[in-house]
Length: 153
Image (cartoon, rainbow, N blue to C red; front, side, top):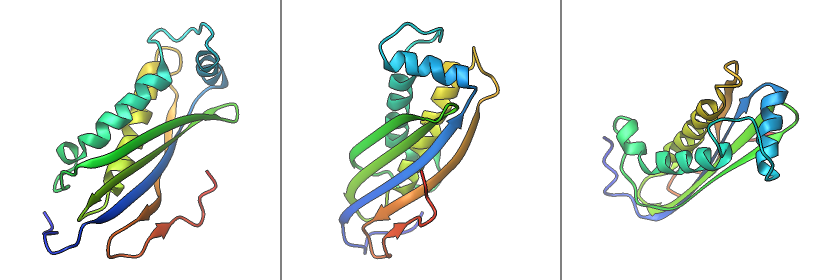
């Protein structure tokens, strides 16, 4: 584990994104849930479960990634938004005040939220694909802030 004890505590934020690509019919069922309508997804509230899974994963990142520092997180936000007719965009924003960044927590939140979407929808669509998981932005710390220039969403 890297020794960060000499680093100052600073406000740190990381934003990560990813997507789940699925059949249009699967996304239509998720949209039905968003509209408060009945859907044919047997496991229930896809977006609510995925949001909670991402949040819980961010808090447990140090248990999942070897040598990752356990961090007291100030905030975790996981958003899931249908895009087009066949994909669900997932974005996680993680904040802390600490000596090391929260990039891994944001990436873990997105990845586990995507896995939860897959689990919630696999009964109707086993061909889903998790794609494009990436760090979009990070601020804080001694290194320069980072913003992905080629990120169109």
